[in-house]
Length: 241
Image (cartoon, rainbow, N blue to C red; front, side, top):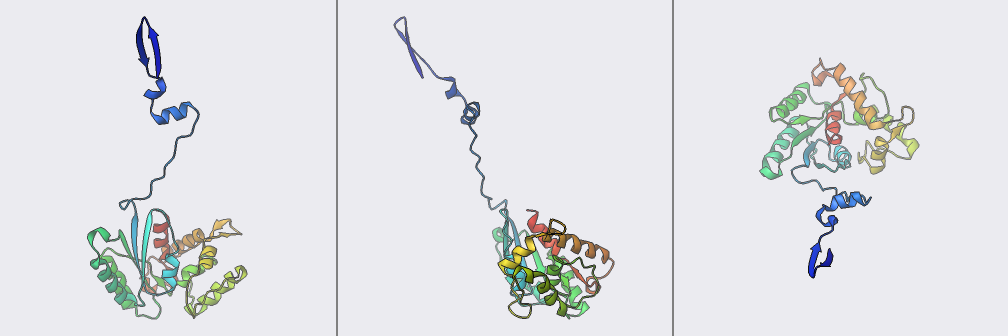
């Protein structure tokens, strides 16, 4: 504000700065405007309900994905195929409209369950607009693809643990496939790390390999497609948000 006395009359004028928005002032003065990152609102969060066959492996794995725009709820049931999908329907139906997830994923293995049960579980999930991240034979095949460029041939799940531990022992890690079956924080970090040979993240390699095998066996019923894992679909959905 400037005050001048001219001809005995007081004249008051405002500086131009006071007419400019604060951001414009800062830019003119060479200052950087404040950048405020808004926290995700409830409407921008993508909510996943992941209902898992295993009580430890799958839940300990998916719980370690922390994305700013994603909310993940995992439920480890110890159920399998059809009974797991039934439980997923029950959990989803019990939630209020405001608490319902955007996507429901059923994570289960073929193991030794009959082709009929496995196929029925996938069909039932599809009928309720749920998604399936199944593996034939087991979830650990997805972990193997982080280290091995496997081409989808027959590989019995009894061999999975040995293969995983062969590749992670150099990092001082281990996977208790016949014990707790937990994906530890250390193991998860290894799965996210870069492959020294390709300079790409192991997770990206696993997605690429799983997608290729899945596509090659797309003419087969999932129950007959071994070795295959559809876990890559869920991981892609999570990391794309």
